[in-house]
Each structure stands twice: as structure tokens, then as C-alpha cells.
Amino acid sequence: MLEALSAKGVHRVVGMMSGTSVDGVDAALIELSREGGAPRVKLLAFENIPYPQGVRERVFELFRPETSTVDRIGYMNFLLGELYARAALSVIAKAGLTSADVDLIGSHGQTIWHEPEARETDGMPIRYTVQIGEGAVIAARTGIPTVSDFRVADMAVGGQGAPLVPFSEYLLYRREDESILLQNIGGIGNMTVLPAGATPEQVFAFDTGPGNMIIDAVAAAISGGRLKCDVNGGIAARGKVDEELLARLQKDEYYARRPPKTTGRERFGTQYAQRILDDRARHPISDEDLLATVTYLTAWSIFDACERFALPVCKPAELIVGGGGSYNKTLLKDLSGLFGTRGIAVRTQEDLGFNSDAKEAVAFALMADCFVRGEANVLPSVTGASAASVMGKLSLPPRR
Image 1 (cartoon, rainbow, N blue to C red):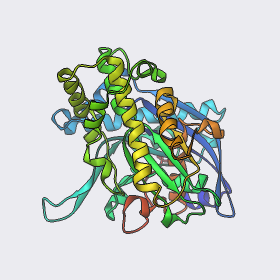
Image 2 (image 1 turned 60 degrees about the vertical axis):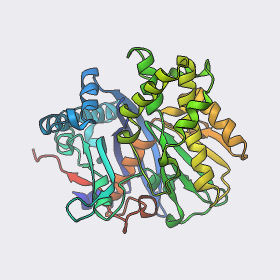
Image 3 (image 1 turned 30 degrees about the vertical axis):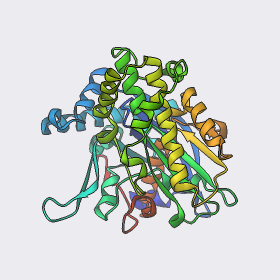
């Protein structure tokens, strides 16, 4: 089966993922061809399928060790497999196709724990990560071979298992005569630095810190759970940045740590947001000022990362922003103000004719395609691994 697939000139592949914000499943169907070895991608359809509210709440329970038990993890692994399968079938139908028209699925799954720093409790350096959304269920329900559980192969050879999207960014966005920065703003922010004419070894990327995660948590808290986010940055736009709170938040040691580095909900999640709310109780400021401050913190963390790690290497012409944060007008305004001081233009994926929401799902479709070709699908210069892995685990559909 895989030999026949890898021999085909054009592949149709579904890529899927759910990020740290746990909004739902992003599913992208692409048509992928190779010309001279370089991939050419055409987006056929994209959908975001929200998780049912009860499911989203139970996924959040898995982020906390005290509420995450083996039976809950096992159940949710299979339940999310069912939901991912439905998302795949939905985006295929949206494109006017059937499962028989699709060659492959690449599913990142839902991360519930990520520990990129090695622990030596038992005398061995152990890194580990957990993504759920069972690939065997997806393959069985759709009838399409499914590649899943990507991160573990990189971590097995000393990598941090993240960030992974820079691999596809290098293939699809690199320019010969211009350096650019690609910034994804999901729950966590991550930056890819593409120097002009870069080789794979010259690309580097890392998590910049919080993306939407703290903004969303604060918006939910001040609204009593009515809001999931600050829509378009509207509340923050009515506030002013509290410089004293900002200065306290900027002291987090993560920002100065050199790449390769990754972070997640374990550092900037619920507990971190609660500390900010507790700080506000001791030093009262308005809801609007609180959201303006944490929004600016995200923008500052991205700019600070550029100053510390990108500018010593290259002079970027543009920062290209994708992910849900690209729709936050206040965040984009803050970014434009900061990067404008260095003559760097801030643009969105939409400004370039792409789709901010689909970018990461497309990346996992591309990684799955590389997997079936037996090609490495990660940049060790980005993850810190000792070698380039062929990441993923294959689930084949049952024979009927």
C-alpha cells in the first residue's frame, strides 16, 4: 500500500491538529505534488470543528495531574479519535470528495502533557510527551491510512519534540534574497527564523512564550466564564498597559533562555493565569487594563525574542503572523508598534493569500506525506535532536 502511495505523483492528504487552546479540531485537505523535489501545496478545504463543551472541559482536566487519571486518559484518547475521524470525513465532504479520493491522514492529536527538559530520576535522561486522539480509530472510521504521534521520535534522539511546524515553513516559505520571521500565535507563541537562502541547518525556531493562552484565561475569568477570548482584542483596546504589572511578568526566566526551547500549558497555563489574577487582587487595576497588559505581554515576548535571538543572526524584512492571535487587532497593533521600531513590517498569513487557521493542519499533512516516503520530517537544528527523524506512527485501516 505505502509503495503504491509513494509512487503517485499527486497526493491528497488531510492534516489535523488541536492546539493548547482546545478550541476544536483543525482539519485541512491539501493536494500535494513534488516538482524538482520541492512540494507544491493546494488547499482544497479547511474546517475547524469545535469540541463539544463537555469534552473541552474534560480535556482541560487532563492538563492537571491531580485530575488526570489513566482511565480518563484512555477514554479520551479513543473519544478524540472518533471526533478526529468525523472532522476528517467532514473536510473531505466539504471539498466534494469521498474517502476513496484521499490517500492519507496526518493527525497531530491533542497534547495533554509535554516535558521537553530531560529528567534523570532513574539515572537516564528521560523526555516525554503525551498526545491523544487514537490514530487506529481514525483509520478504522475513515478507511484511510493515518500517521499520528509525531513528536516522540524526535524526543527519542534528544530533541524537545517541538516546534515541528518550522519543517513545513522551511519547505514552503523560504526566500533566497530576504530574511523573514514566521510567528504562530496559538495558545503558545512560536517563532521560526528563516535567514535569506537558508539551508535546513541554518533555520532555527522556538516557543516565544504565551500566545493567546493568558489572554483567553483572563477574558474567561473577568467574564465569569461567559467569554472564551477577548474577541478581536476589543476589551484590551479600551484599556491601558499597567507598567508595574508588565514589569513583574517580564521577569519570567523563560524569556532569556536560549533556544532550542519549548513551553506549554504546564508553565503558562491555568496556574500562571491565576497568579496574575491574584496579583491584580493585591494591586487593583481595571478589567480593561488587565487585558491590555497581558495582550501587550504577548506582543513584547515576541519582540523580545526577535531582539535576543533573531537580530544577531539576520535582518528580517517581515514578521508574518498566523494562528488565532492574528485576528486580535490589539495584539497586531502592539506588534506593529514594537517591530516598527526596527523597520520590520508585520503582516498576516491572509495578507499573503494564505489561511492562518489552516497553517498548522497543513504542516501535519505535509509531515505525514514525508513519512510515507521515508523522508525525515523535522529540523534537528530547531528541536535540538542529535539526528533527523522520520516522525510518526502508522495505523492502517482494517481489511474489509
